[in-house]
Length: 139
Image (cartoon, rainbow, N blue to C red; front, side):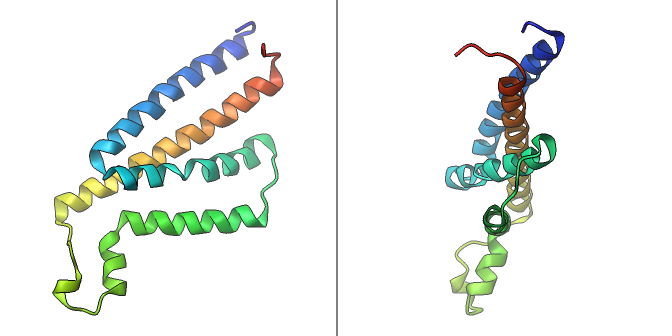
């Protein structure tokens, strides 16, 4: 970077990229791949929420409703047994899989890792925007 602030932001961005990739791989170990990738899709909504505060960007009603829907999906993925119990008839045969304590713990940690990755990615996107709008960057 040409200035101390630009250099600091570039170092921060590098650290964020390392964290994002690391958290992504950890999430793949802790959760089924489809669940992890689905949870990673929180990043755009978290980015938008951070950008409202950090960059003064607008937040539209449609984005709010979409964020609520995504948050509901996250809740369903975080605790699938609860979803199963809502839609089952009460027969044990309807419940294809009950998580034991260790599986539930692993799932909650996996969900937390995915959400942390999305937050770090959201902050990284705001830092990237900040670098692009505050400093002349080569095209």
